[in-house]
Length: 130
Ligand SMILES: [Zn+2]
Image (tube, rainbow, N blue to C red; front, top):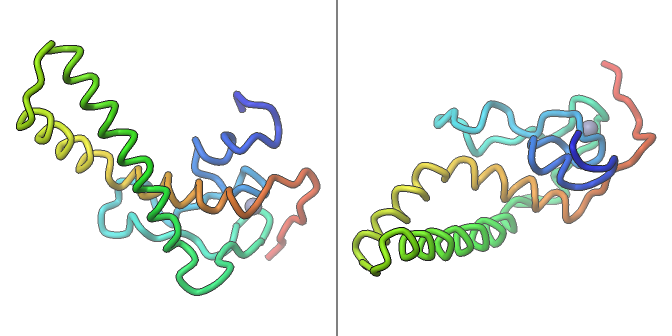
């Protein structure tokens, strides 16, 4: 881990559960397009259930929206800095391309950020034994 123990980035960047930073959060890898929205209901490592209520991950849409807005601003600024002119069509197409390319990753990122708002790292989490 690059960040100090307990830092939320240790959960967000590798997309691992926030309580133990070890259990996989997604059911499959990010770009498995048939199931890229599927998350595990329970951590394999510590056994904690992360779905607090029905439609719990609905709130992650707000996080995804924020990530999308930041990305659009960055793309627009980069487009302007590289070409020194502003072309609405070029910038729009570039934003569409990048958003399509990063869509599954933004989906996973927004969900793991959303879960990290409600759960924190615990040093001595209970280890689930099956
Ligand atoms: Zn866990």
